[in-house]
Amino acid sequence: MTGVRLRWARPTPTGRWREPALRLLTTDERRRWEAIPLPERRDRFLLGRLLLRQAAAELCGVPIDAVRVRAECPRCGGPHGRPTIEGVGGRAPHASLSSTSGLVVAAVLPAELGTALGVDVERAWPGRERRAAIDALLPPTRWPDAGGVSPLRRWTRAEAVLKADGRGLRVEPRLVSVHRVRGRLVASVGDEPVRYDLVDRRIGGTGRLGGLGGGARRSNGTGAILSVAVARTER
Image 1 (spheres, helix red, strand yellow):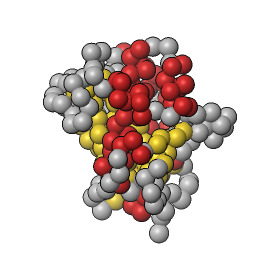
Image 2 (tube, rainbow, N blue to C red; image 1 turned 180 degrees about the vertical axis):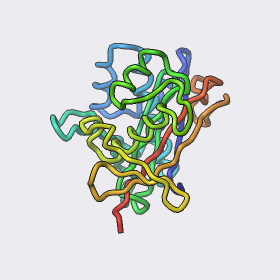
Image 3 (tube, rainbow, N blue to C red; image 1 turned 120 degrees about the horizontal axis):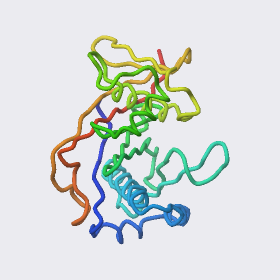
Image 4 (cartoon, rainbow, N blue to C red; image 1 turned 120 degrees about the vertical axis):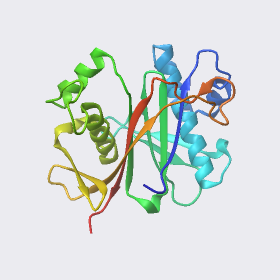
C-alpha cells in the first residue's frame, strides 16, 4: 500500500522524550493526558501524539511544532476519538493511532490517496486475558489457529477497518469481511458500499527511532503484528 507513513516506538520509563513531547500538546491533549490514571497508559498517549506529529510534519514538510492534533467524539463531543491533523496547510492528511502493551504506532496518509485511514496493532503473543477479550468480540477463534488467517490477524484487520470506518467498536467486528481481489486484500463492513484496502505487517527487532531522544526505541524481539486499512469509494 503506497502513501501510508508509519512510525512506531515503545515508551521507556527513563526516556528523555517526555518533556519535548509535553510541550507540543494542546490544552485539551494536556488535560486528557493528566486525567489518565496509569503511568504506562499516559506514556502511550503521549508517545502516540508525538509520533503522529512527527509523521505529519515529515509528510507535509512543516515544523513539528506547527502540527496540531485534534480529537472530537462524534457522540459526546469530548476531546477523544479519531485524531485529525491541523496546522499543516492545504489538505490535512488522514491519521490513525494504535497501541498495545509496550508499543505505539502512528499512521498518516495524504488526503488525496483515500477517504479515511485506520491502523491497529497487537502483540504477537498476547496474554490470556487479551485473547479472551478478542474471542468475546470476534468469535469463533482458536488459539493457536490451525491454519489460514490467525485469530489475532483477523482482529487487527477488523479493528483497522472499523477505525477507518469511524465508528470503531460501535459496529460489531464480525461484520467486517475480507477478500483477496487481484492479489490485494479488500475489506467491507456489512452491505455498505465503502471498500477498504488492507495491508498486514509484522514488527520486530530493536533499534532507536530517529528524533525521539534517548528513551523511545523500536519494538523489541517479542514482536507485534499490525494491519492498515485505507477507505476508498467503490467505483
